Structures are given as structure tokens and as C-alpha cells.
Image (tube, rainbow, N blue to C red; front, side):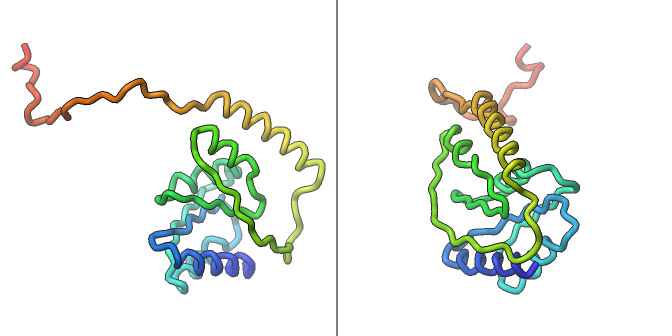
Length: 164
């Protein structure tokens, strides 16, 4: 938890340079104190925190989608201890823009990694097929032409009896 509080403190300090920015934290039904630590840290630093807690673990992709849906700004920065290497491909596939920013990686100071070479390889191959399927199924609508019309006002709209 100390590591998370330190990371959150660094994020809030950087965010001070960007008025209106907020930190969206999605807790994937964890049993640890991550959300409580985040709330205390945000209050202490007067940082804007948008906390979201899932009732149960739903997986990394859903967590990212939840966080992105709760974000209110034009710029979204994702942070995750595990990372999600396909976000740039998915964002670009729907016409979005991405940027690569150098980061300062920190060594693990507590706990054990749940990943090894084999399960990361299997997960990567499975994710690759998932991204291919998603890219095939996802399409941005192509608007043929804008429709210019006056808005319908309920007050001036004829009633059913007037139309008859």
C-alpha cells in the first residue's frame, strides 16, 4: 500500500500543473485497502479523485473500459501495474490518437508476480486473437452527410387529434 500511496502522490503532484484533471481509480473488487488509501491520499493532497468500485473482479479490459468511460477530459493516461499492451492498437482502430511517453519503471518492492513466461505467452496470444476479433467487429460509423433540420419542440408539435 505504501508503494501505491507514493505513486498516487506523484500523480497528484504532476496533475497540479493541469487544472481540471482527475484521477479515476477503478477498484476491481479487491479485498485490499487500495480504494481507502486512494481516498485518504486524495483528501490529504486536495487532488480530484473519481473512485469506482466493481462488486467483483471482472478483468483488466472491463476495468480499463470503466475508467475510460468515467474520464471527463480530452486526455486519458492509463496506469496499471500489469499494463495493457493493446490499448494503442484499439484506440487507433477507432480513429483515436495515441502517444508514447517514456516512463520511469520502478522495481517491485513487495509481493510476487503472478506472471511467468508461459502464462504471459498464452495470455498474449489469446489477447492478440481478441484484438483481431474486436478490430474486425468495431467500426466507426461513416456519416454520409449531416442532416440539417429544425429541432422539434414538443409545445409546437401537432397533437394526434390535430393531425387527423
